[in-house]
Length: 136
Image 1: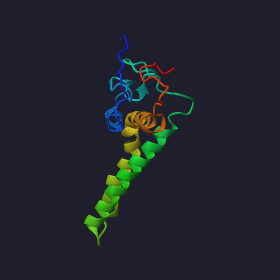
Image 2: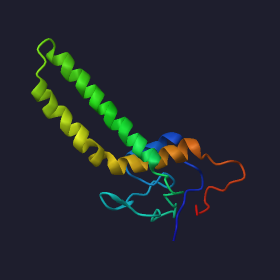
Image 3: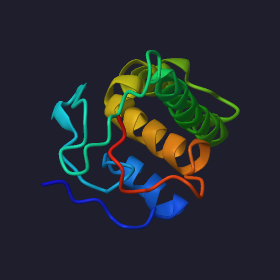
Image 4: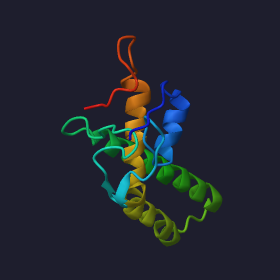
């Protein structure tokens, strides 16, 4: 039995659900079979996640932006803390793992964040669309 809320959640709540790896429509968890494997549909409301081929290109962009921002902040903080004698090897020891493992660790979050951004800002419901319809 699918249970879908009767009203569309706020944009903030939708984004929060994305940040916590939940369905952007109903807030249900358990969207991943394994760490990298997203189920095709929400187990609670039936929302189909990959709306079209190439849909998750937005998730790739989000992953790049988030990891790039983390890298930039850490880089600036480390440089500011070590000026004028900047230790290159220790800096690389911190920054290289961020760039190598950050995108891998953030991968599932980038998918759910992208679905939440898409649902909250790019495909808002119009007056003629019913929120409780299964999206297929």
